[in-house]
Length: 109
Image (cartoon, rainbow, N blue to C red; front, side, top):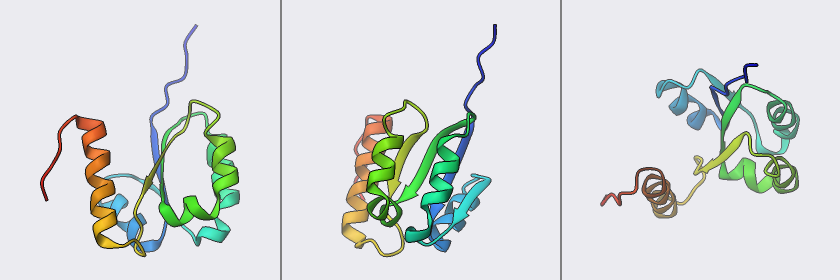
């Protein structure tokens, strides 16, 4: 009996964020306005191959209730990143925190 592996990483956010993740090698990126993201998020939550869903803070803030329901399941893991409207210093702090959590080291910027 084999279990299906989750290997997909997908991003959902503004055009600049999607482009950045595409350049970083993430092949599936959705460019969408935060208030129109709910149908895409619902579809992605059902994807049995999706491991990590990267969304901008704007998408997260606009779709809080839906994301709360999606987060009840172990997959996909949802990672919020600053989008183009994020305040730079706050975005920098959030990225540092994500790196520290993932790698266990604190980067000085």
